Length: 116
Length: 112
Image (cartoon, rainbow over all chains, first blue to last red; front, top):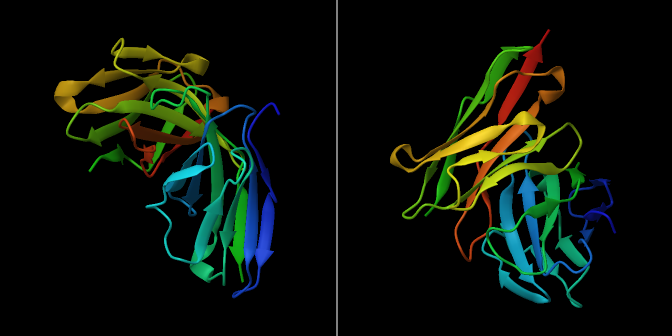
């Protein structure tokens, strides 16, 4: 696709419900990132994939958060037993084929999660 | 550990005035530095990035930023603000092998 695509754009979940957020990166992009952005805050790193390998998951806030990218393209961020503090925008980003820190990282429009 | 500090959570300017958004970084070695803009209900769009080439970096929409190692700063400027510049701006840094670390953001308001 032309850009990073995320779905659903908006999700309202009842406390305790499991949710799954999908990210379609730009075709051919090796690196994929997930960020969490709370209201009025900057994005905070959650996890990073290079192809199908999850190289860094140090930002995942608890074991209720799980991310996968089984075929090295589409990624899913799963949140189990959602809590109100999980309410945030979840941003997915990808970068160009030659994964390098200087490469431009392209962000999707985010999935807005509200836990009630 | 690296960190990014954006001074001023909210900046207001008049249309046509100079825009100055401040960013300071903290890391043991000079990082790669980025400015992103976020319009309401949209994702982050890259304005410009510093990757150890020229210290004065020009970006899209007339924005530029200057890397100053002695001040550990990477302030964003635009000579003349436009109404369409009103948005949230994020400074970010990265080291080799690490993900982007973002500041808390600065909301830019532009009045006519």
